[in-house]
Length: 94
Image (cartoon, rainbow, N blue to C red; front, side, top):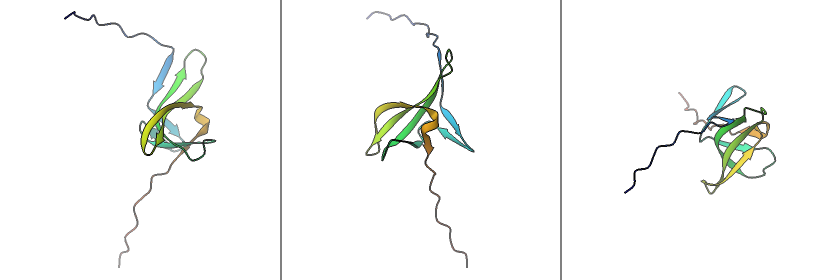
């Protein structure tokens, strides 16, 4: 069997962050979000990508079908809507 040479990682003009500040909340990788203008669809957040040369940013995410990731999609960050996490019911104290 041939020995494979290790290659150096290529430098790229894109910077990737795996969290997104949204108001007082932080959306982390794997969180479920909605996109304004995409009716009835939910997406799983992957990363916030910025082109360092032009300064343009976009959100990379997976479209969810029946709870499983299907398609890779990208949107501008101003279209993101956070889905609030449901809290448990309060217990009545007597």
